[in-house]
Length: 212
Image 1 (cartoon, one colour):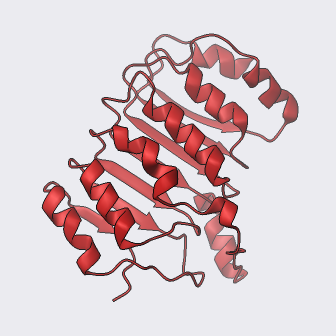
Image 2 (cartoon, rainbow, N blue to C red):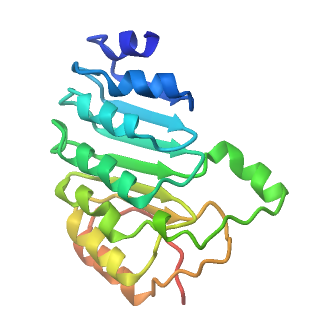
C-alpha cells in the first residue's frame, strides 16, 4: 500500500523501488488497474528476479517524461519475460524521449562476494540468453543515448553491434559487459565495431569485450 501511495504522487520524478519476493505483494501489484507514476523521469527497479508484476507495473506507468529506466535483478531473467518488459517500455507514453536503459544481473552489490568465492554462474541456460531478439523492442526508441547491459548471458557478436548502431544513432554510451570473466568468449571483432563509428557520431563511451 505504501508503494501504491508513492506511485500515485503527482510530483514524484525519481523512484528507486526494491520489490521483495513475497507472493502477496506481487499478487497485489498484478491486481492494480490505475495509472501510476504520472510525472516520473527516472525509474530504478530492483528485485530477486524479474516477476510478471514488473511488466504490469511498467504497463501502468503513465508518465510522458520517463527518460531513464534501470532494472536490477539478483537472478538472470528468462529471455521471454525480459523481452515482454522491454516491449511494454518501448510502447509506453515516453517511448519518444526515453534516453537511458540499463539491465544488471546479478545485483552489483553481490559481485564482490561472488568474486571472493570464485563463483562461476551456470552458463548453459539458453532460456536466459540475451541477444538481439530480446532487445529488439528497444529499437523503436531512437532517442536512446545510453545503453548498459551487465549479464553473464549477453550474446556478443558483430550482428548485435550492427543492429544497435543502426537503431540508436544518438548513442553516447554503450556498455555490454559480463559482471566478470566467467569463461564466455565474445564474438565481437574489431571490424564489427565499425558500424558504431559510422552511425553513432556522438559515441564517447564504449565498453565491449572484443575477440581480437
